[in-house]
Length: 31
Image (cartoon, rainbow, N blue to C red; front, top):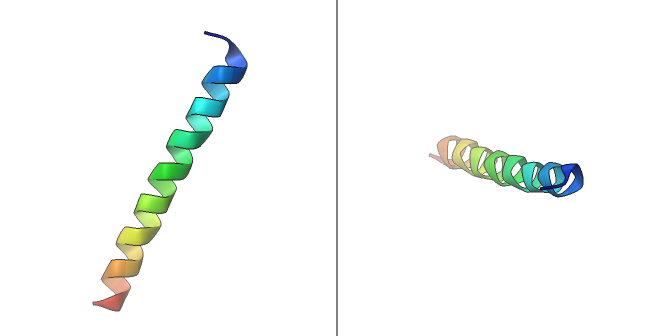
């Protein structure tokens, strides 16, 4: 597995986690 592929995969994972986190915060604020 090359570094580029690893870094790109990591970026996608981090972005998804960040979006999920923001959605959770948004839901809490709405309630």
